[in-house]
Length: 513
Image (tube, rainbow, N blue to C red; front, top):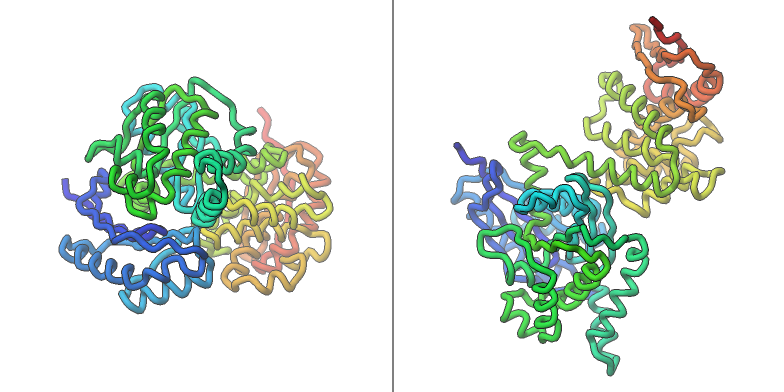
């Protein structure tokens, strides 16, 4: 079977690495790492101090890709620890010096790739119970701790906690200034960060925990070609006791750790211990699958080499969890999502939007009403603010912004012919984002009107686009839809202004036999 070689360059806050992989089975043909980076004290210095090191490594990667005759490759960077100005500057410098363009991954995209790799970890573990019992994926990263829950081989929920360079610096400062045992101080600090999440978790002695992205444990417990393995609770406890008191220099030597990784090891072990005590699992697994695995899964799916059925499902589940948390009516949200997607599909030759926007529309339909939990008067503005503060995993910052703005512009209280609440805010958006937002907002407004009563009176719609730019939406129902008709007429103006199409709602009784 012919190999499908693909090159993946990934730059984290620790190092930049190249993986040349066969996408058919994800086997690694070549792996090259740069020397570790200097760990900066603030966002403006992340990567910038190591620009020469980064560019030298990239030039070497290009030679390796050439040697393997790999022309198909991508270059990603973790943007969790830098701001937008720094990311633009760094990308410009890399392109000028090496000719390569970097694609920055947002925090929500990083979490999504970790969840994907967690699913692959579930499948790689040779345990018949692991796909059925509640399984937590605990992922330690350069900026965040992520905890994800899976049940019956499906993603259920995810939580994130900040533990990056800034927090490590705070811990170091606290322990330096205190005569107390540093372990006790770090324990208290970690506990204070985890306590709110701990109140949401339930102890379940039948659950499993997969520990991901912790080099000290991977290097110690995993054999050279292993991607995952099980350890006992006693084995973990013994390892913890032996390692927790080690100075950084001993850690580096004993477990072959980079200095930057060793700096995080002590807080990370305490985090792991805290979560294991909280969750009380009867099975513990270690895996070295992480962000790169998730990115490769996405790439294999795009190339139709390996189908990834989980990607959009994870994103939608996360949105549905958010809607449930803010007590959104699930039947109403599901109904308007169904209608919105149907309108989108039937009018592809009219709106000319990319397929990706179908997902963004579905997500916006799911979370558009979460602001009602906070304030009914300006609920759509509140929805936008909540989405801004709670990014949907799997989306870029740009796509999260589009979902947020679709929510914001669902209001029709002031002037239904305008796509915005306050024109100034809308004019500050990127012009391409403006176009997507206004088109998707127009579609969602109509879909929302079709269930204005929240009673799902309309079970089915049939859409007809006439040659004279007349769009007719036929509602199949025998119920009284006076409220839906009134709401439709109020909300249709934006659609007509944006697409230049007159739209009308007609009722047709359900066929009965």
